[in-house]
Image: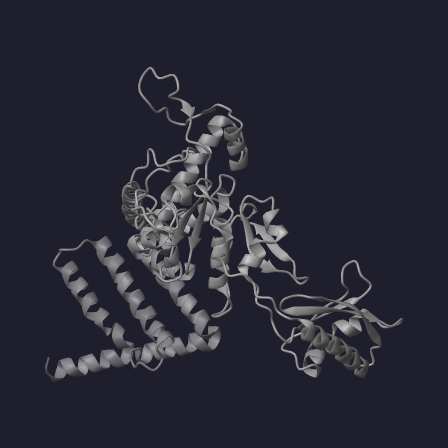
Amino acid sequence: MGRVGAVTADGLWAAVGAAAVLIPALLMLGGLRALGWLGRESVLRFGALGIGLLLFVPPGLYVLAPNSQCDGWLGRALGGLLVSALSWLGSLLLLSVLMVALSVVTLGWRPIRAVGQGVALGGGVVGRGMGFLVGRWARWRSERTRRAEEAAVLWTEANIAPIEPFERETGDEGLEPGHPGSTPDVSSHSHKSDAPTGSPAQAEASDPFADRADKRTLETTLPPIDLLTPGARVDRSHMDEELDRLGQVLVEKLRTFNVESHIGGRTTGPVVTQFEVVPAPGVKVNRIANLDADLALAMKAQSIRIVAPIPGKGAVGVEIPNPEAAVVQLREILEAKEFRGARGDLPLALGKDLTGRAYVADLAKMPHVLIAGATGSGKSVCINTVITSLVYRHTPETLRLLMIDPKMVELSTYAELPHLRHPVVTDPRDAAGVLKWAVLEMERRYQLFSANHVRSITEFNQKIEAGVVLRRVQVEGEEGDEDRGIYDDGVLPYIVVVVDELADLMMTVQSEVEKPLSQLAQKARAIGI
């Protein structure tokens, strides 16, 4: 470069800053014109562009980066004048407009058309890209769904056999061993009826399973109530004395809060006792209703519940925990008249209410049941009570169970239950297959109901028992058989799906079980699932 070049460069940089690079370009433009390589119009257009940039770039650099030392003397002078007159934002907007106008005049640039073309070009590229991605994703999802459905159908066909109709005849004729995937043979440990004859002692010694019923007996009779532990008789005389004392203490504690009252009666349940507190004339009910925490503290009780007032009675109910909670035996509930006389199709013995009476609910009227609670709150006891209640009310002819137990400990005790439609499922992936089979069975039953113009499983089974001729959905049998289209598979059993640890199942195979679960919960009640 030499000293002359260095001095020239410093002078240009000090004058116009970074825009000094445009001066050599302008000189080259003049040289090309002198040589005749550029026309007059081109030189004028590009020359005007260069001079305009020399005027607009330095103040623009000053506005954008005032401390960068790239603006030169011209930039600081013009930029400072613009900022003081228009502020930073106004200066930036003015310079932007001038730059756009310069490009329009010198280059013939049409910004609106250019923006439109850019948007159209960019939109086309993005649209084609999104279309390609969406198409690939749709094909992948369709393929994945198809494979999952095929896998579920194959798993269902391999593991769950069709429900075979029950024969009402007694005896062992026609019994066939269950094929893989069907209901487990609970008589696999039973011996044949031709046991050695002799004394009862010899028979018991030769046949250790002589007391077990055969498969036909288990499938057509209800289990004996003697299998359950009877409730022990408890002397509650001391409990009555203690409850009388608690009633007097309750009246005294209310008096300390300036509430005059007396005990009008009490209702004793297995866990809590409800005292009927009759307030004195002029005492507002709200004064008693707001004393639950104070009464619990005064009576040293874990918690107290106040019902203000008791429906149908002129008293306020104060529920206090019993000094000793009574054990509620399941056999006691199953033998109660409330359970034996229950008209529901799937009665559940859930325990006792506040009055000590058996509490029974009908599962057939519920879309689904969710048992929730903290550890040790009795969820396992409740689910075992539900299953036992159903088994003591239905034979395998009218009830089938599907059990899913990822923990492999809670429901394993039911492995030989004749009501099982399929062995207890412990693999979450197989659980998804079981639920999908239940959805297929639901759809099959809906088609069967539609073909016979019935609306519920109760109505369908009533027609079966009345001997009404019903139609099949799919014709079965040989050609020429007039009875091919007649339904002769007997009553439809209720199917109860029991899922233990639903949260674990949702965490492992949520995408596989969420859809069939929602379908069953919404639509399966009417057809008996």
